[in-house]
Image 1 (tube, rainbow, N blue to C red):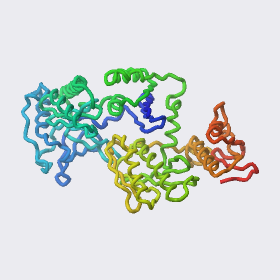
Image 2 (tube, helix red, strand yellow):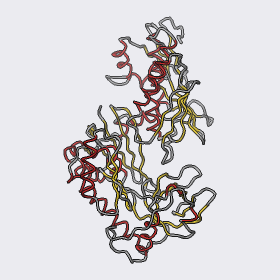
Image 3 (cartoon, helix red, strand yellow):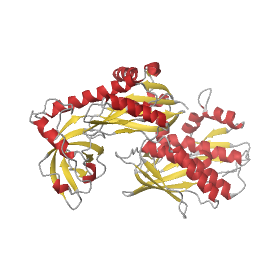
Length: 514
């Protein structure tokens, strides 16, 4: 399993594409104007507590007030408020909390009006970006993420990632971290810390303490609201969270970004520094690695899969609905149950990919093809869980209901990735839209595969001259690839009378086959 990170840079946007064995699984965008990213910390002012919601609306500088629920305050809120006040007025100049006088924790079942007042200064962190008509969701339980550990001010807890299985390793890490963590700070040890030495952990901790001190310096005489700590640049934060030994290459088309990524990799994994490559070919980097084509075929309402099966993805304000269809496919399976099981397994893998790719969150309902066999339903459920194991977003999957529906909740912290794949219809002058022409080639390929599996021979493809030229161009043309795969030569005839997206398959006698 090889992972590649392809980075495309323009004047104000940087795109990151994560490939797994050449297939696009994640797509990220870093825009200059995104001021409310997850992890950013703001010095803000409480607009008004709302006892009925047990929450407060807070002015962080967004057009709509941010939402702060009582359960997101953190038990150490009084200590945080005291610290903010002292630092803002210049009374607190030592930002380490060794000699800081902590206050009593708040009641976990208390009321917002007892702990927060209007116009009060408070430090808050973005936990959910503005989505649709809603402002950001925030928390005053702060955390600063590093490569191996997460620093939690005003806490004394040492927590170890649940994904580390070994009890001996958990005890070792807990012992090491406890010995280096300063008083007044808690630490969450991340999964990638497994097997690391104390020197590496301490280096990470010191970097986080420096970021904390730099943030506190900004708070003195800072206006309200203002960002006092921003997340790392997108490239570094992506590498921090997802980089591991399975990465085989990181390709960057910008020299400055190339140097930044190389320097960061030198810090976290010096042995892997050589996998960073600067791309300066004339062909755009996303074009070269086939990412543009995958974007066109992976986004949109309908998503094609192997052997003619496809997904229909619908979005509403409340939830996402995914319908699984077998299409007009030919199957080697002898009965409907086995065919349904086969299609459902293919679909489960693609759905897991789609959730990560589009960053779909909230409630997702999947309508798989009905299966009567309980063992098949259990196998499908386990397969879906396995496919979603690498998903970093928190999620929960329920077993298939008696109606065959699978429900998933997936953490939603930022707006869903939505890329328009339809284009103006080239065959008419009206404003109608059609699927991107590049998707047409995939549809033709799937249709051809279906016809060959049904036993058709001497297949003739009639299509528009432009499409015909595209399919036959070059030594290793698409038609040649069909031949190597299926051991059948397809005769392609250009038809001047056809519209741009029109095509038909015929036999050698000129009779259309469907």
